[in-house]
Image 1: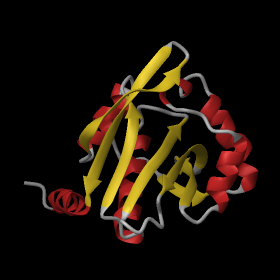
Image 2 (image 1 turned 180 degrees about the horizontal axis):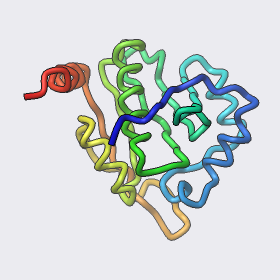
Image 3 (image 1 turned 135 degrees about the horizontal axis):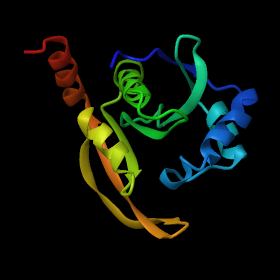
Image 4 (image 1 turned 90 degrees about the vertical axis):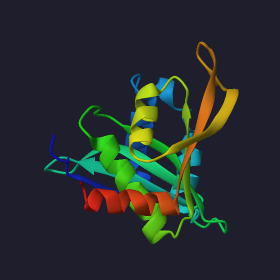
Length: 173
């Protein structure tokens, strides 16, 4: 499959109705813990966050959103807080993860890029593993869901791992 046309643009407050609608979509709710509008407003305004609209396709239509947190972390630990897309199975998630890893390591000077993912979200876990993330541990039954509790899997990639991955992609054998 050819790489999709994907770009990230900073979220504006006028985008928040779209953000909330994507987050509330029945296809996305089981895999995230939705935020209140004021939390998104804070993430748009606060410099420690980067909140982006994912635009995709030849017309760059809005397709979802992503949030980075810890952008000013003195320890160089940037978190992929959220990635929520409307269209799945088209390579958009992979394209976003690659753009965000590049942003974390090259633009924000991260030493560590990390995330947590619900244990039931096996599709996302497979994507993160294939993009170089390593499982660090589990926070057992740490989030309440509609049908009980779910565990969070903490995954990360270190700067030297990212550099090795980029070098391997540049020089396939």
